[in-house]
Image (cartoon, rainbow, N blue to C red; front, side, top):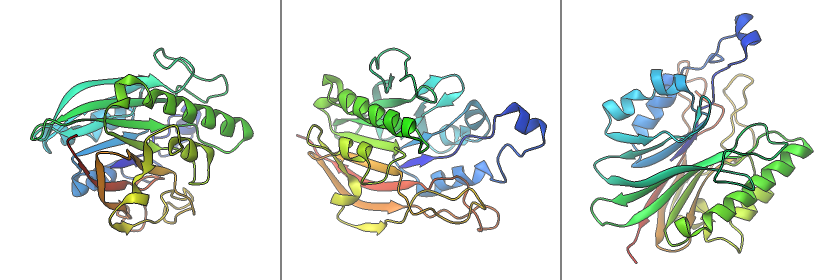
Length: 271
């Protein structure tokens, strides 16, 4: 599962004016969705220290998860949660979506340090290892944003073709701020990668609605899909795909984030 939970308002001057840091949302409702869906592995975007300290702790203390927090820079995380009973963490790390991924770096027009976190996990029952990768690329629609987003997607593809990942089944999740006809989507699913959109090969599609919530009221959806689960086209079978329509906030009238979670049921085979 992938879920962009939305960062709280952090602008000092906005908070000084009395702006609600959660914009009328209730983060506990986002966590309620995670617990209800009960995925074996999932990744989050836009997580902060406050998310980790005040809202996500029960996942590891009560619900059987371990976590690689995937800290990319000050107060921003892309955590990967996995069921301790099912998986063992082999290795993990952060790589930056830039020309120098191994060092903290960004393209000059990037809004901040965009990166991918990853966890290589071993299935405790089969011994099969796979890479779970969590990415979040540049947002917004100005020409500079589009150009940077495309560069970041190309950098991501280059990283996935490294030896670290090239011999493993890969599950790539995240917020790509791109529709299916956009450059990032087509770079990721292009001829130089093994990646495909899990929805397109799923044996069953339970719900394929849009994933972007209109922040004006938090109750309607924009006609866009920005959130994806990509998988390698070998050794993986996708059994179900669903966008989770979690309008459960404020007495079931609004969404707890500006994105909807996306969930896939996946089987990884031994070679």
